[in-house]
Amino acid sequence: MASALSFLKKERSDLTVRRFLEHAEQRFRLSYLLGTLPDAGAEQEREEEEEDETDREEALAGEDRAHLIEKLRAYLDQVQTVAASASKRLEESLGLSLESASQADRDTFEELLEESLRDADDFHELVDDVMVDIESRFAQLTDDELRRGPGDWPELWFHRCPAAVRAGFIRRVNRFCSNQAAQFGTLLTPLVEGIRVRGPFAPIWNGQMRLLAAPNSALRSIVSSGQQSKLVFAFTHFDLVQGPNLPNRTAREQHVLASLDQSIGALGKEISRGVENALRRTASERSFFLSNIQDQIPNLDTHQSVDAAEAAQTGSEPSGA
Image (cartoon, rainbow, N blue to C red; front, side, top):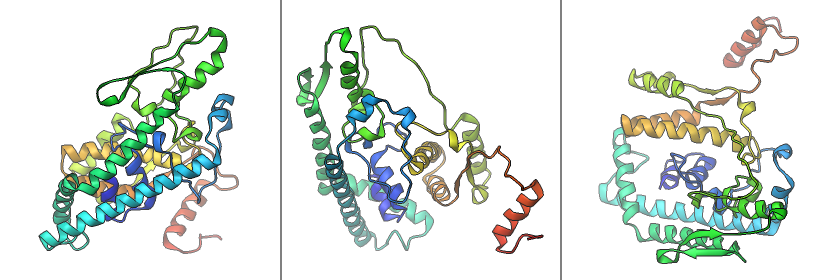
C-alpha cells in the first residue's frame, strides 16, 4: 500500500522500494525474505569484521541472487501497475487527479485510493503472489521436524543435534534469527515469534536506540507551532551506524530514515495525515547524514569553515581565497 502511494507521488525509487520491503513502523521486513535490489550507485562497503565464516558460507550464490532480484523487480512492476490502475479509476470517478489536486484534496485522494486498492482484485492477487513466495522459503528446512498449523502454515520447527556440532547447529538456527545482508532472500527471521535453545550457550546483548524521545518531542513541538517549513533533519554520528544488515552507505541511510518514518507515521496518527505527508516530503528533501564532525579539518580554522559554508550557499568565492 505504502509503495503504491510512493510510486504515484513520484518519490525517489529507493524510497518506493523501501516502502515495499519495510513496514512504516518497522514491524516487518520483507527484505529478509525476498531480498533487496543492488545499489549500483554506492560503493559496496563490506563489513568484514562483523561477518563470520558461517555467514559467508550461507551467503547466496550469484545465480540465486540474480533470480531474487528479477522476482523483486517483477513485484515492484506489479505495484506500479496496480497503483496506476486504481488511481485512474479514482480520477475518472472524482474528476480529479493526484497531481492537480490541492494539498487538502491530495490527502483525501490518498485515503480514497487506499480504500480502492483494498477492494481491487489485482491488489489481492499481488498479495497472494508474495505470500506464496514467502511460504516457499520453508522448503529450505530439510531433515528437521516441521509442524504445521491450520491452513498448513508452518507453526513449529524442531532440531536436535550433539553439542559437538555447534557450528552446524548455529548455521541452521541462523535461518531463523540472522540479519546478515548477504543472506537476504533466504532468512525467515521476520516470521519467527520466538526461539528456545537448550545447550551450552549464553546470550550477549548489544543494541543502540536510534531516534530517541527527545528528538521525537522536538519534532512534535515544531509541528505543533507550525514551524515545519524551517525544519532540517541532521543525523549526527552517522559513522557509528553499522551492522551486518547494512552493507553500504545507502543501506545505512535507509535504516536511519526508516526510524524517522516511524516517528512521522506516529505524528500523522496523532495530528493529521496532512502533517504526515508534509513531514515525509521534508525528510525526502532535507535529510543530512554527518560523520566524524568532532574531528578538526586540517589547516582550516573555524572562521574559514564558516566562510566556506556561506560561500557554498551563495555560490561566491570564499573571502581570502
